[in-house]
Length: 304
Image (cartoon, rainbow, N blue to C red; front, top):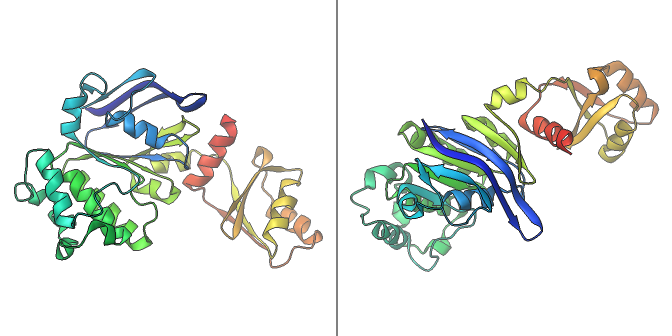
């Protein structure tokens, strides 16, 4: 059963196209991720799906309800955690949670079992103002507020942005527990490494979806051999590889450069000879498996 169905959604802000012909569906009880950089259109899409923004054209349903015609019903059935911390910073942790429970005609006590695993970690600080919480604690409070009315679908817009690595790991463990409890989760992130934590992902750039599939199927369909290359001068390395006649693509990845060749003709020996002749020192050239970011960059090149 599809929990979310989106068909040919378009959205523009004057001359800026935010979403162009977006079509996808989300199965009940899965974690569906939107992976893409800032400005890709993720927030506009989420705001449409939680009925805070009207699309210019196209159709979208959540739990079988139209996001335009049935917005009041949808708002009772979904939980939404926006990208920016949007709770009341002058209210305490407990006051924020009580406020959101009251809006949906429930109480913390009635639905405490839904948030127990998450809220119990910040409950010792229930009298602290929300504005004084750390990034990880704000994240847990925002998720608790989004869950307190027992939603069937959770929309989380870049929930781990600006959060430390430990809190990011904890947060994804929470999402898996919620998924196992039957809640459908739609989450967006600019972090490519979080793609592998989703059941399926949509790679999105400039308002268009590049590909939708399971993360492992996306990487397995890459179809090119990759070399991770490093030298003492990374900027010169990028230029020299770009000018190499057999070069198909070259992108920086941390301290390394990922390189693919035209017609997939990879020769480690020839590259090493070429780069050494140009004065590169401390060379490392190793074949690697493609990751989601490699696939994203390749798809983005094909689309441009």
